[in-house]
Image (cartoon, rainbow, N blue to C red; front, side, top):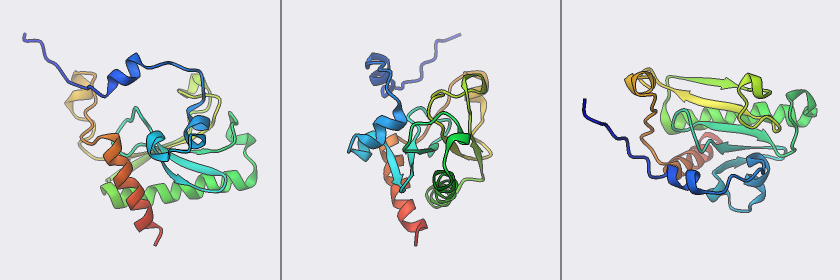
Length: 164
């Protein structure tokens, strides 16, 4: 059997880069450079950010600015905005990608699958009928047809359209 290769040069930055212990949900919005950190929408208490290692193109995470590990610790304003920004994210992703469905969820705690367990966040993942094809099943590899930079452009534009 011939050896097969899947080129993913954008992963080199992650592999070689520093593995700091900072919280991506605190550093991202505090950086002052939303494009570089893929912050696609800001509210008063919460924000939406592209997942740098997405399940599908357009995989967003909605998080409060405040660093708390549990949805139970959000105050009423944060909780309300977390959900309204999730609604806005659904509308923007529908505008940008016309998905056939969505997965929404909060993985709270390491045992529940939280990659960042100390800062609660909602995943908003657009889904299509063919997004789980043979590549993830046979090759344990996910194919994403759009770069994060292009996703950023399309989604920020779609947030503007969806807000009208």
